[in-house]
Image (cartoon, rainbow, N blue to C red; front, side, top):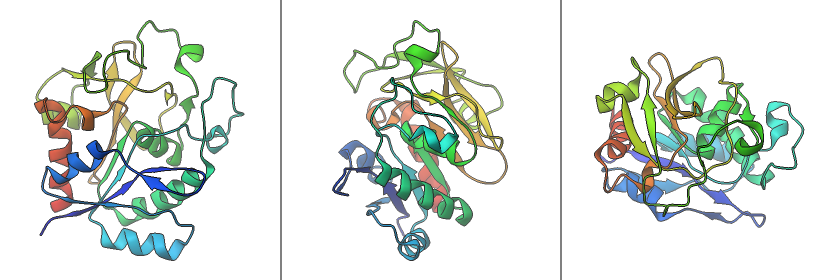
Length: 233
């Protein structure tokens, strides 16, 4: 049986949920069934949806409200969507309690970190000293910088490499990592590009967008193969 993957997509102010095709393609091409999570404020609906799925995928999107990690909003902070924050923080609590596999990409990684007690840089250019452009000028399906993979981490075991290539479409990033999480990858300037939770739980999160690279790059493809295999188990 194909594992069912609940995906959290973008939500606008009319509570319309949408999803880039590359997110669902990266799941379906690895033998799983992607299901888009609807907007709801019902705890019963969220719990029911969580019970139906074998794994969960938190995708990219707009900025998370800084009040979620105890900061006032800086002028450089981008757009926020309270509807999406409400749904995803409530859903993450239920998903995390279920013990089922979790994958986060870009905003999804930032949300996981904040939900578990971490914080974010609201704007890398104004808060960090770096010459690396984290909002690449290259096309979205192209590589833009290298990613350093830390020794002894799941990503090192998965790829067998100390370095891989990624892309970059963000202006926020992990500032303080949540206590239960561990870094597994960094950009050349030290920005956190990947993290995981130690122990038996499958929780992986990546700041770049491997769903835009999986079709042409084996290392990025392994990220989804690994996630789906954990959901199958």
